[in-house]
Image (cartoon, rainbow, N blue to C red; front, side, top):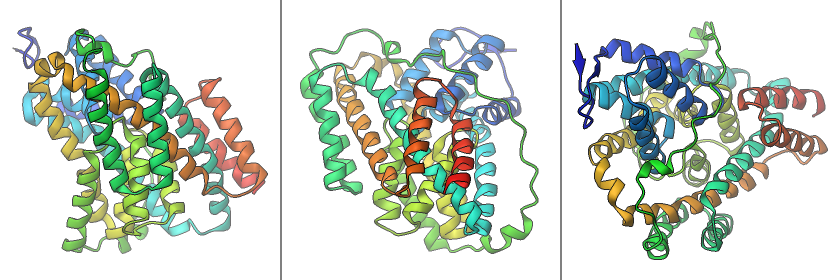
Length: 402
């Protein structure tokens, strides 16, 4: 039996909800190396192999996912699931895409809280910090090559960096996003092309990720202290992460200055060191970096905290994605929206660049930190080494040199 995807008028093979779940679970388990790796695998599986969605429609989905808040790869999964099976399709597809990385990060976090203070393990994470800094710098550079095309965009980048480093905090981030949107509408509304939004789609030529097996771990003894449940605290966790999720324009790396301002400086739920370690663990697990929210939730409120923090960081963007999918034609035609987004993108680049200063400032003041940072940056920029290999190599180097 065939079904018409939302708004296309072209029938495609019907896929069951269970098949959607397992398809995206498999994709998530093999998607190391950032959101573009996961997007590439989704495109290969859904378009090239199964022919469930047309290539043109996939480009529309990538473009829409790129300009909305939240993790780009998960937004795209929600888009595909919604087009194929409506609301339930979006739900089970997102669950399949997030669950493997959630399991990975919870197991790693349990081990971290149990053994993280062992000197050898501490040295391992000391090596992670300069490598994470290099990853952030690499991300900011790659994004700037597309987002910064003139002096106006450069001004927005510089202003964003100055505000975050000079003032900082969540409200600064909020002001940056809102002000950049207004300035973008003012500066670019007459310059925005009437071309369709698909021209904004990122290239699909990124690597397809690295296949890996699931870890076989017996975490039961470690998990016992993490099974407590405090309703008021878990509700607060959900509201905080849900509030942050709608500000995450530009992908998961915007999470870094946001979490610094709210969870580290504001609530004091984790230390800066623990936060950087959480980002590092998010880099060596498959799937999106925002799964690091589970680490923070686990630290604050046990397993229930990990669950609600993860739901909070993914659910609001998913709902926005579903709503926007229905309004895709309007967004394509709206020059005002696209002009505002043209202002927001360089501001986001500045926020990510500021995050590199924040994270790099926590690195040990040691020559090995500079060596790891330079080596990681060369590996990422020049050699195109995947992140999943950079982080472990940096940790082993830290273990040897610190």
